[in-house]
Length: 135
Image 1 (tube, helix red, strand yellow):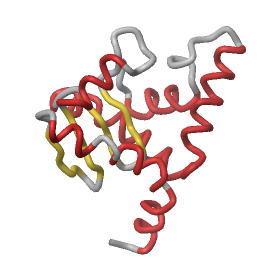
Image 2 (image 1 turned 90 degrees about the vertical axis):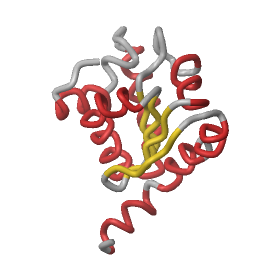
Image 3 (image 1 turned 60 degrees about the vertical axis):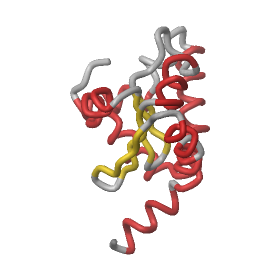
Image 4 (image 1 turned 135 degrees about the vertical axis):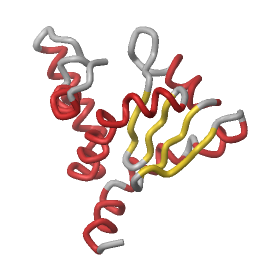
């Protein structure tokens, strides 16, 4: 691992720790985990429940990025959303511990502009444009 990559992991580690918090409970509830290109992907079990019922989107979310941890409902969701979620991993590397507050602020700005807090969120627009994925 290069020194630069190590620095990016450390800079984004506060957000990654939130994702790691769900690893053990997900595995205990039948979920799975694997590392793909330096990113821990967790799916099924509690992660699936969390995305379906706790995400602030109608019908839930297919996947969610927390630093270098990506939660997915199932393996297919992770495969399908990987290009989009990897953009969020890069955003986390850029913003470090400020990513989640900046993401929340971007949603608030969209709301204040009478726009959709998810679809018009700066970080989501960037991820959709860069990944050419539609969600």
